[in-house]
Structures are given as C-alpha cells and as structure tokens.
Image (tube, rainbow, N blue to C red; front, side, top):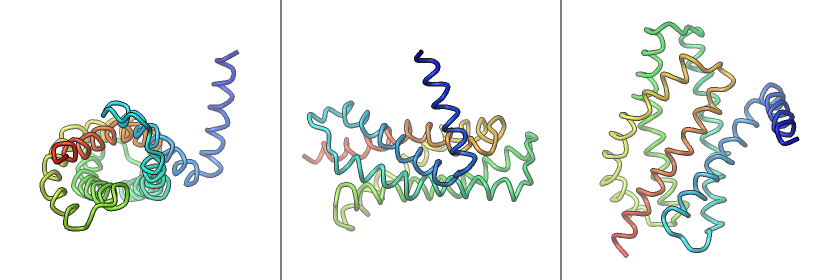
Length: 186
C-alpha cells in the first residue's frame, strides 16, 4: 500500500518535472531547504521552531536556488553540448566551482544575515568577511565530488533535484555555522 503511494507520487513528480521544470525545481528547492532548516533548528537546540526563519529560507530556495540551478545546468549543457566524457565533466566541475560556488555561498551568507536574521549591513559584512573563507574552502572540499556525480551520472532533468537535495544538507552546515558564531556573541 505505502509503496504504491510512493510510486504514484514519484510518477506525478516526474510528470510535473517534465511539464513544468522550472516551477517544479523551484518548489523542490524551497521544500528541501525548509526541511534542512527544521533539522538545523532542532540540532542547534532551538526549543520552538521559528516559522519566519523557516519561510524566509523556503523563499530563498523557491525564488533563488531552484531557478538558479535550473538555468545554470541548462547553460552548462549548452556550453559543453551535453558531453559526459571525463575531461568535459572535469571542466564543468571546475567552471562551477570557480563561478557559481563562491557566488552562491556568499549570497546565501548575505541573505541569511540581512534577511533571515535582520542584521545590519555592517554586522553582516564583518561576519561574512570572517566566515566566508572557511565556508568556501570547506565547499571546495565537498562540492567537486557532488558536481562530478551530478554531471557524470545524473540526467539533465534531475541535476537540480539532486543538487537541491545535497544543498539541503550543505545548508544545515551553513545554518549551524551562522548560528554558532551568533551563540558565541550571546
């Protein structure tokens, strides 16, 4: 019974992904980052879930990370003409790591500080200046492997979904990093 429900849900999801790829990827990214925030809030010891924070992070996934990933992967496929040989995959991973990875981590940290936490520009700039190098260096240890798997083995229509799933785990790390430095100041 349960497996049939899951099977039907997956079929419906695949149909939506085919008929409305941008919308489906945006919603998926929003739901996944929302889920990761719930986990991060629980892990960090928050007694009562913060719905405003949760919704603002879901908005980030829906309005930014899902659409960004959709267009990034379409662009990469166009630039590299859908090739999947090792040399091409290495070029895709390198290009992604030198462009979108630094930008996305910087943008997330700024969004989190300014929008989610409502901090001043001066405070956010200082925090990002302090934490960004270690976040990006950690990203460069983790994301190239994910990028390789994504470009080598995932069909184009699933790349954003796969990336969003892994990004939800990465967002837990970023959330906890952001909260730990706030806790030290409190």
